[in-house]
Image (cartoon, rainbow, N blue to C red; front, top):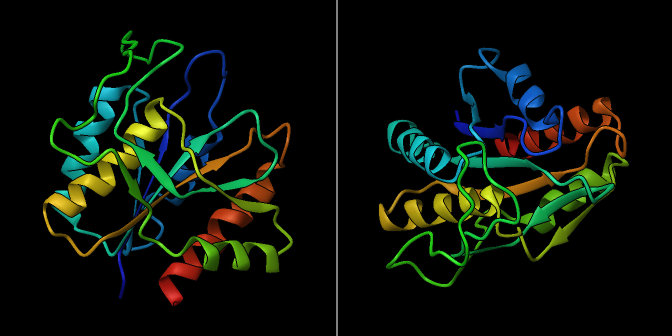
Length: 190
């Protein structure tokens, strides 16, 4: 049976809650083959925790969720940049400016999960989804890039992607749940 790691983040900045945290918590301890973990919205702490998780579990799939309050659809992120740059402080009080995530890593990495397939599966379920080509430069991008880079450097077979979700004032929580369950089942059944 395929194993899947799914991560979300705790609340940050002006957001009173982060729906990715609730989505991930709802999956904890429900399935033997799903590892569901909330990461801190901190560049250094999230990166270190993610690397430990990937090394320990070596999942078949790693799906990382993040909040983008400016969208009203599921954004399937294609490209992660080797850049940390924050317009606000993370939850550790850090605000990096034009810093590399990996000194030896490439400038950009592509998601290794078939995002066209996921977009089709979500569309079939009447969930608004589209591909995006820029994860940003905050902690979401850091986790997207760190996941792909760690997998590549350690020659793991894990396929990884990052997915931005809208806030619950733009897409209902039940629709977000439906989207995440569709993504998980599409990966684990395919």
